[in-house]
Length: 248
Image 1 (cartoon, rainbow, N blue to C red):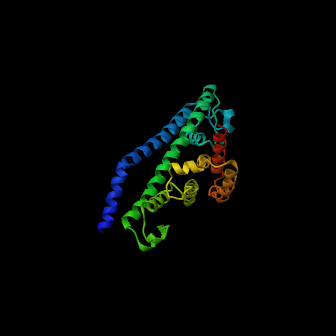
Image 2 (cartoon, rainbow, N blue to C red):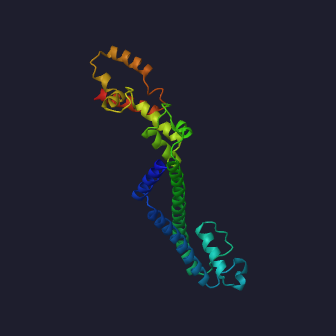
Image 3 (cartoon, helix red, strand yellow):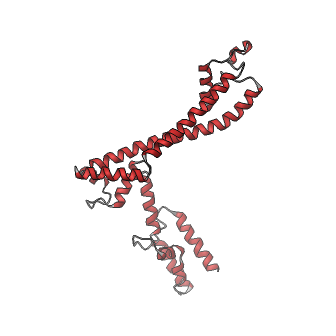
């Protein structure tokens, strides 16, 4: 109970210092306000547009009712545009030209913000549930990538990112492969030595003869981790760097 309470408290503090409930509510209100305002403007303008009713009743110049106006505004803002309700006046057509251009773009942004906040709330609730319930042996085994029976900061961060939908496991694997490819000396860290090895500067500074350098380069190519790393662009960058350094 103490552990669950501690996890819950820490989560609430992190939420307040990061994306607070008030901020999410403001974003939702802002997005909803944009959608409501655009729909309202389109509805009012179309409703007040004389003779802009159903195109099939155009000969009778039927004025639109309120529901027809709402329907027209929504179909226009969502870029559906069935065309069964249109504006026939010149002023109305000018309005539609700008309303559709600005309104559709703004509506897409508002909907994206609205759904994004809802997805974030859902993902954070999943993480909160995990923190409140705490670790179980089954969860620990699932998250323990290196099999040492412990959950380190890296493994925990990986889990939270995937749980919140910020990253996928294939993204994590790609980043790990990229790091392994750049870590030429296999020290587990990236330093200036790795950069020199990638650029071929160490072989240029060795002072060997040209023949010995050629033999050494051939032997190095056989064991070069970049060749089998799945990142040929790194090998190409190293080759070009060595070429230009030799030229200078």
